[in-house]
Image (cartoon, rainbow, N blue to C red; front, side, top):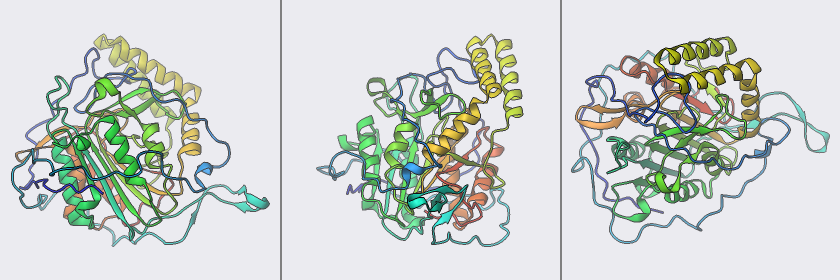
Length: 445
């Protein structure tokens, strides 16, 4: 295990941001309309485009059929060993201070009643199919009770001394989430790996290789009822989808600190590393505080604030695509025009439906995987400033909501996060899962 001793805490109350977030521009493209290949603009977006990994062939059968067997942990080093030498020097925030506490009134709705813990038995859903020995079966999954081993990986990248890419709050986010997990959910410091680009130890720098190694460490040896946590705060973007599982035609990506030489990490790759190896009943909770992160983990079930699974609204998508095309033309943004027209074509031809069906067929899992993301795939996430400390809006709000009231259902938490952000930011945080979930259940991790 890595022991991340020596990281300071950050304290103080949080107030409302002084104004709208500062935009992180994307060279060569104006906002509005679907993004061109390679990832657009925004506070935590970046534009370089690298080829995504080879397409994964879609298996046949019911949703997630390929997951209903035991997967070995992904290949990689035999262990994610502790770094040698003294822990890295603290880089942000000064000496340890008390945990941040949210303001007493943040626009929360009163809950209708205490949410229940998840059931302990296998849950069946969807249509029946003919299984082994000609027995009628159903797709199934199992909720985690989060009573087993707890492990976490927190990644914060400020892109220090990288012109046009530098952010301010991502390192703070990683350390704040680390402390939040210890204080509110009982994670042990020795079971949390933190990667930041101000670290003194080379193994704790969030390079592409170190991030992938750390993700493999996170899921290695996972068992039912374990609780795993992955947090990423940094730049995100999009690149052309090559395997047909994205309704908008773009894969989501995250950018390691060495993206200029090593390239980005595509959502298909992240899913392959941290979701596919997990057994049924193992919980993985993720927070992606980056631009275009709505489906950064490639989970096929996305939820509305009513707690229902979102289904594509073809009429609304067609109307929005047309509106975006007109707006882009008026601004002289021909790249935006072409992107909007492409989106209209996909809607009219039904390719969005095909992409959704493929995602559910290939990315459904009986493991208990939940992802919170800072915005929709088409939006940017804010690099904010809260009461003297730089922070990501999603990282700050999600932890503040649970500091204020630890026991919330998934639906309540999603609604409260959006309510806090609504008057300050345009981004709409998303909740997605690896299988259909009952959003009235208690959120645990």
